[in-house]
Image 1 (cartoon, rainbow, N blue to C red):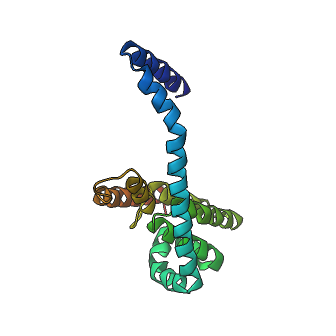
Image 2 (spheres, rainbow, N blue to C red):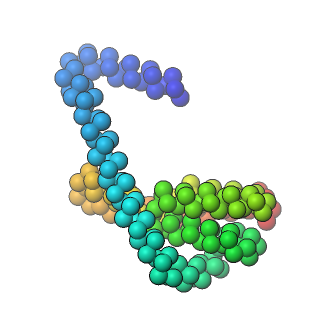
Image 3 (tube, helix red, strand yellow):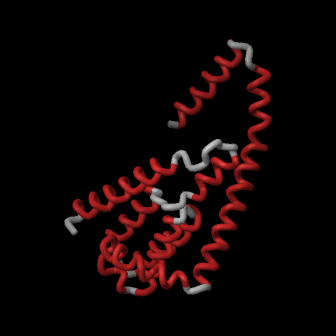
Length: 184
C-alpha cells in the first residue's frame, strides 16, 4: 500500500506538470495545513460539546434509565458477561456513545470495556465489541453531520438513511457471523 501511495503521488505530480497545473498544485499544497487545522478544530469542539452532553446524561441519572432500556439488547449481544455490573456499565456506555455517533468517546468506553472483559476472560465478547465499534452504527451520526456542515453541505442529512441501513446491517451481520463461528 505504501508503494501505491508513493507511485500515486509521483504520477499525480507528473500529470500536473504535463497539464501545466503547477500553480494550482502549489496553492493546494500550501492551503492543506489550514484546511486540516479547521477540520480538527471543528471536530474537537464537536467532541467537547457531545462529551458534555454525555456527562450531563450520566450526572442526571438518565444513564441508569438508558441502561435499563438497553439491558435486553446487551444480554442478546454479549450474553452472561453483563451480569458483572462493571462490565455492564462499560458496555452500555459504549453502546450509548456509539448510538449518539460519538466515535472518539465510544472508543474510550470501548477500551475500558475491553480491559474489564480481558480481566474476566471473555474473548468472544471482546470480538463482538470490536465489530460493533468498527461497524459504526449510530442513530445520531454527529461526527458525520459536523463534517458535512463544516464543508457547507446543502443537505447535511442526505447520507442518513444509507448510514442507518449500512451501519445496522453490518452490525447485525458481524454479530451473527461471530456467534456462528464461535458456535454460541
